[in-house]
Structures are given as structure tokens and as C-alpha cells.
Amino acid sequence: MSIPTKYQKIPGLIMAVGSAIFWGISGTCAQFLFEQKGFDPGWLVCWRMLLAGFILVLFSMSKKDPDTFRIWKKPMDVIKLLLFSILGMVAVQYTYFYSISLSNAATATVLQYTGPLFVVAFYAIKHRRWPIFVEYASLALALVGIFLLVTHGSFDTLVISEAALFWGFLSAVALAFYTIQPVGLLRTYSPATITGWGMLVGGIAFSPFTQPWEMQGIWDMEATLAFAYIILFGSVLAFYFFLKSVTIIGATTASLLCSVEPLAAAGVAVVWLGIYFGPMDWLGTLFILLTVVLLTLGTKNKEPKPA
Image (tube, rainbow, N blue to C red; front, side):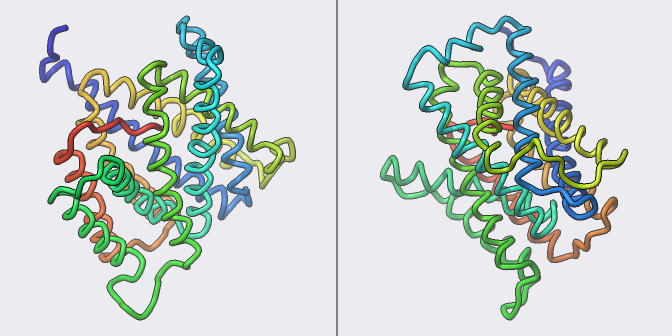
């Protein structure tokens, strides 16, 4: 296989940045639905997984992907898929959306971006090795960034609630599990199959707790457009664009470009919803994004971020 030239890589670069922007804006759309249309985070997460998962499975079937149903023929793989669906898909999306409902899309997204540190910690324990220098530096930057984001530099007060901080960290831990757990499945089956079934099964499993058949919130044109954006752009297209970009520019570059996501969430939330995101917030965001850059460039065997 020939190595893509710099011009052939341009579509991959555009798709990687595009997927990050789609994800970031979808978080702001969720905040809009929670704050102004009275939607429940759990209900929205359930419908997001059901619809996006159904579309992705149909897409996989339309491509005649042999993995679409092959995964259901091996009991151990079914168990792994169920764990990924419930402890991965449901957990990472619910904790993230609930964190948004308690704070805002920008803060929740930045806090979730501390997830790679938990991935590093897991592999350090698993392989019984001390973290390398770049990992210590990333931890220090992340701690400073979190401190600035949640306190604005003051030791006396929090600018977000303790509950928002708690669920933000849970979102980061869930993201780490979501990244690590399906690695074995992804070596055997296509990412579209794993993510599609993961979302669909997770949505079905979550349904008894959220009762998606009972309509939520105020349904008008604005709510419908925001909801449709979360499903189509923030889930299906973002996932597809990211995976396609990985095949063109590689997982390292694609993952690094996804650092645009918190910036997109913050920028859109400030302009559209008028949230306050001051100098300390931006500085804290910068420190946390630097951890992503350091970990992406300074560690080996990096895995692509699932959508």
C-alpha cells in the first residue's frame, strides 16, 4: 500500500477536525435541550444510542460487512459486547450528558478530556511500570488545568458544583473504560459493527430506566433541529468521519486533531448560549489540551478514540 502524499491527506485532516467539531457542538445542543427545552439527560442518551446505533448497524449491513452478525456467534464476544454496551456506551454518554446538565457543555467536555490520564494509569498498573516523564508532565498539566477550571485560581471556592465536578470525573473514568475495554473486539471486528451494536444494545438495556416511549421536554422546531443534530452529526457522521480519517492519516494524528472538540464546545456555548467562559477557564482548557498533545505524541501503542 502506498503512503498517502500530503495532498491526499487533506481529506483525512478535514474529516478528523470535522468529527471533533461535530462532537463538540452536539454537547452544546444537549445543554440547550436541558436548559431551555426541559429534556432529561437519561432520556436523550437513550434515544441517541437507539437511533444512532440503528443507523450504524443498517449502514454496516448495507456495506455487506461480514462482521455485522458474526459477532453474535461467539458467546465470549457477546459477553464482551454487552459489557462494552452497558459499562462503556451507556456509562460514558450518561455521565457526560449529566455533567453537562449540572454545569455546561464546555466544562463537561474539558473534564472528560482528562480520561486519557486514567488510560495511562491503567496500563502503568497492568504492565507494572512507572509512568515515563511525559506522563508525569501530563498529569501535572491536567491537575493545574482542572484547578483553574473549577476554582478560577482561588483556593476558597468552586465555580462549579461539587456534583458537576464529580460527574465530570466519572465521565473521564467512563471514557477510559470505553477506550480500553473493546480493544480485543476491535482486533476481530470492524469499528462500525462494534460501535453500532454497542449503541443499539446499550440503548435497549437503558430503556427500562429512562422510558423513552414517554415524550420529554418542549418539542418545537429548535428542539427538533438540536435533537436531529445530536443523532446525525454528533453521533453517526462524527463517528464515520473519525474512522475514515484514521485510515488516511493514522490514529495518532486523528486523535491529536480531536483536541479541537473542547474548543468547539466552549466556543459554540459562549456564542450561542451566552455562558461565561473567562480567562481562567480558557487557560485551564489549554493546560488540559496540552496533556492530550503530550500523551498523543509521547507515548506508544495509542488507540483511536471511539465516538
